[in-house]
Image (cartoon, rainbow, N blue to C red; front, side, top):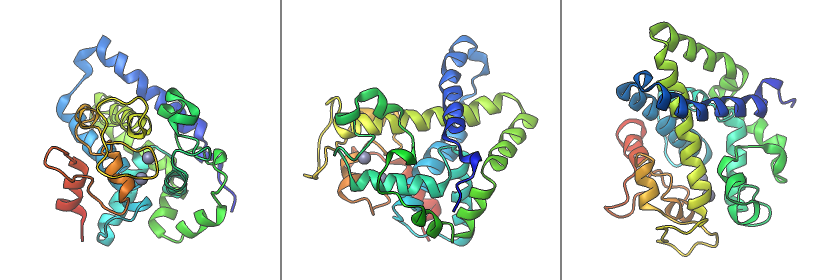
Length: 259
Ligand SMILES: [Zn+2]
Ligand SMILES: [Zn+2]
């Protein structure tokens, strides 16, 4: 299968750079920030789109949901602009398979803090990802649809936001995407023990994964940085194991998406 050009990682990364610029923009023009709109965008794109849909549902298949909610998760995963589902999934499975070894191109131990922090799914850097795996994923009509119509869906979402109110583009698209990169950046680094901060392990995994309650707090308790719990049992939709380990994404999955 030919991988189409509009899944260019340069384009995806360019969106991410714009998302990073949204932080200084908000600091210079604080009146452009809307907390309610940002929180809605955070739930839709960061928590549900990236964490619940791409990570826990499509990649780890940690819960089952209904047909309409399956399409909603595929849509939100697409809008989070982290690459199409059929790309994100094999990349992340490879991370679990090769965690903290030389074959893990996002291991902070081997590639350093900043390269791991900014890493996105660059399939070219993984040896064991096969086009066949992507073809198999494409048998899912939702995965195929959002692969074929990847950028049009994202552009339509941004246009709708702009027509309602242009500041929504900032608050419900770029800032939530910044949060995706921030959460997964911290997960790739602190979540893999670099640097050791308040990290702790509930499980003696063979990789270098850690949980961090503090980092989880500064990422709105979305749960992704309870990373040792996740690496120990990737098939669980919630990463919460103790009362102090908060997992908003797992909570939303349980209340809204589990069939
Ligand atoms: Zn990991
Ligand atoms: Zn994972």
